[in-house]
Amino acid sequence: MEKVARQHIIEDLLPQKFGKQGRLWVASLIILCLIGLFAYIRQLSKGLVVTSMRDYVSWGIYISNFVFFVAISLVGSLITAVLRLSDVNWSTPLTRIAEIIAVSAITFAGLIIVVDMGRPDRFYNLFIHGRLQSPIVWDVIVITTYLIISCLLLYFPLLPDLKIMMEFKEKSNTFLLKIYRFMGNYWKNKPEQFRISEKAINILSITIIPVAFSIHTVTSWLFATTYRPGWDSTNFGAYFISGAFLVGAGGVVVAMYVFRTHYKLEKYIKDEHFDKMGKVLVMLALLYLYFNVNEFLVPAFKMKKPEKEHLIDLFTGEFAPIFWFAILTSMILPIIILLFKKGRKPKAAFVAGILVVIGSWFKRYIIVTPTLLHPFLPMRDVPANYRHYYPSWEEWAIAIGSLAGALLVITIFARIFPIIPIHETITETEEHENTHSL
Image (cartoon, rainbow, N blue to C red; front, side):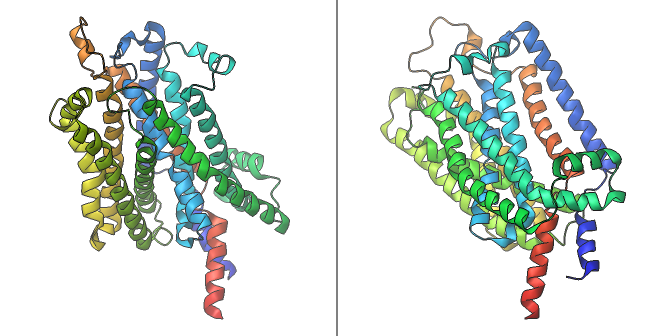
């Protein structure tokens, strides 16, 4: 490749300073995080009584948020591992976007669990007195393992880019240069380093797939091993994994459009990427729709009394508006949009991705709350507010603050590091040119 072309790619993909819109976006996220922090301080000082969680709905919006974060984090293994091992070259511009979404999501999944605890100062008891019979201990183990592997999959491909950014000192301030040197000063672009790095990435890509399946299966077991109407299902493992693949892919489509638009990356994140990811989304939405039909058809056919009350509440009762909104926005509408070629254009695919992400969050809420309000033993002699659950403003503030925190991590990463791998893009361009010159 000519030196001029190489430098052009580097300049296109180097991190860019925030403009007016970017600074406003960061300020908005910080304000939401601070409001959430204030609400959490109130919860710490007054206890969980500030929430609307009671004896029956003891999980509520916090665990809905946890399941959502765990689900969207699966995108790291989908894009980075599955497509990389399948030698799908078109996914290169998407790998780092997927990994940073995975790392930020799984980090806040861990944090939201601590928020859900009434006494977070006793968290250490989980490690001192934890029992392997408990699915919660399994969840802690797989989440920690998944976070470590995801961080390594994010870091190793970043090493050659750190070297490039250190060479372009005029594009970076002193603080960023210190970060680059701290993280990658030992990287010398030697062939043996590339061989070791490539081998490590392949090993991690193979390892993260069973770990990713484990984390979502174990999360589903937290529900399925609890004897409740709506959760007493052997379908939950596949149900959760298919839903996680869907929301993760939807999150990547949204991020692709945002970065492409604001960083002018049309040459690297092309229409064909949206077309291919749109087809992936259709396949995943159909798969998740199948597991949803399976999840509700079997108990509806048997119509045991506790299951009947739960299903009626979902389909026609108190939770029907949220339930049908979640089904329509997370699966039906995206399928209709993306089935057509025009629907897989960037803007239309972005709309479909937004629908998937929003609908999937409400789907997690539907999985958690209605079931807790329909125990096998009828509710007797309890206050009226125990029979319903409407999150308090503190719960909403903390939940929204955690979502804003995950977006803030992604935003700051995009300011410090290249969101599209520079070295891999240069290498693929060289290989493409060499192939056409033969």
